[in-house]
Length: 228
Picture 1 (cartoon, rainbow, N blue to C red):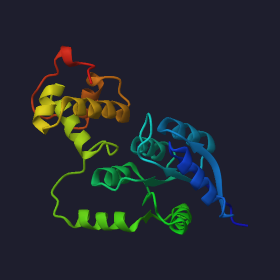
Picture 2 (picture 1 turned 90 degrees about the vertical axis):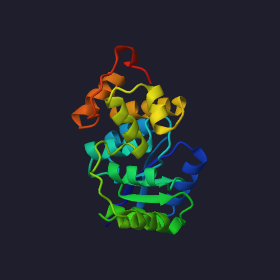
Picture 3 (picture 1 turned 135 degrees about the vertical axis):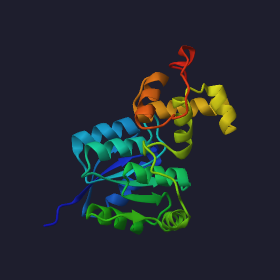
Picture 4 (picture 1 turned 45 degrees about the vertical axis):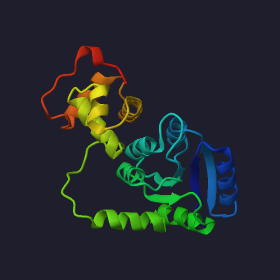
């Protein structure tokens, strides 16, 4: 008898989890073994339950789905992540792929396709929805001369912010350089701290410079350390 595919749901919307639970119950070869409402819980539950598949939302309280995916893949590479989200922008898609997701589907995917994706990924394959697959084709068909960036859990914008942090730039300067508000910069910095698991700006600078970022000569002033 074939073993059932053990699935863990990670999504902060109870109604959506209810729908997934009902769907998975219709397949006798799938077993739902747990539900998490945020990125911290899903990491803990993966450690405890060791599922075959995690259905991962990207935007959740606390640790987001990209950072959670990266940590899970690093610690438990046999656990496969299928992202199930509303977001199909390049930053979200490729951040999830860099973090190690083996599938990327949009909420609203046909139920039969989601069940098929679970079985396919559980057997070692990968599954991307039609819109995501087309986006990937377009992305990789563009001429590119950029190197692979460190910290795959960060979005492209967060990489830009981290590079400027590593150069010693305060938030006001970063906002001016990137033509965004200081509040937006603070949000990016907070996300960077969470994803890199650092406590303050000084630790982020160390991590970034170890990875080769912030190569322009600059110094972090003491009155900026620890600020977000």
